[in-house]
Length: 43
Image 1: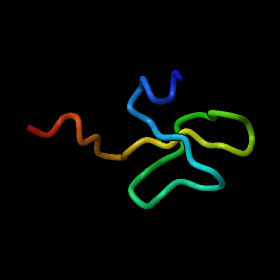
Image 2: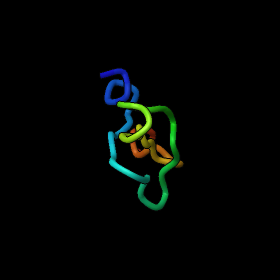
Image 3: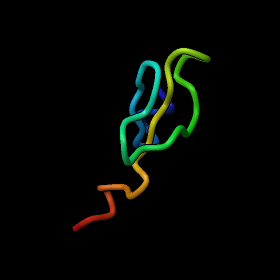
């Protein structure tokens, strides 16, 4: 759950546009993707 706690999303195969591979949820199939510009910082 460290991926979700860090603001990431678990994705299969590849990350969506505007996201980058931060780590693995389940290596090597499920990726932990995070936004390049985190929405959490927007007010």
